[in-house]
Image: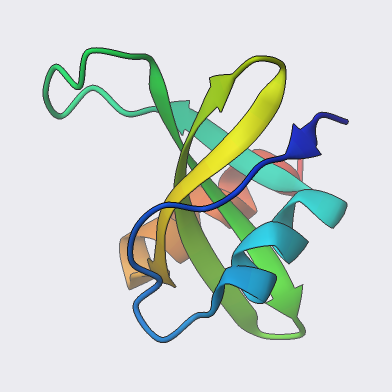
Amino acid sequence: MLAIGRASSSFGGCGETNARRIFEGPVATLPDRRRDYGEDRNISIGRVEPGALIVVAHTERHGRIRLISARPASRKERKAYHERTLR
């Protein structure tokens, strides 16, 4: 597991601590190709407690995960998480 570096942006009520916690368990990670950010970014969906899934945008810098933002997962994102982690 990569070390997690300092966060930079917004956490949509999820909190930075919860954003970090998703990487302690199964996550569904997809590349974030919505636009050109000038760096490779990913979106990971993970569980912070039973029934609570959040989405974290992040990138990797110098071997560390840099958190960008976090928010509660949408219905579509919850479905994607279950499809990818319950195989």
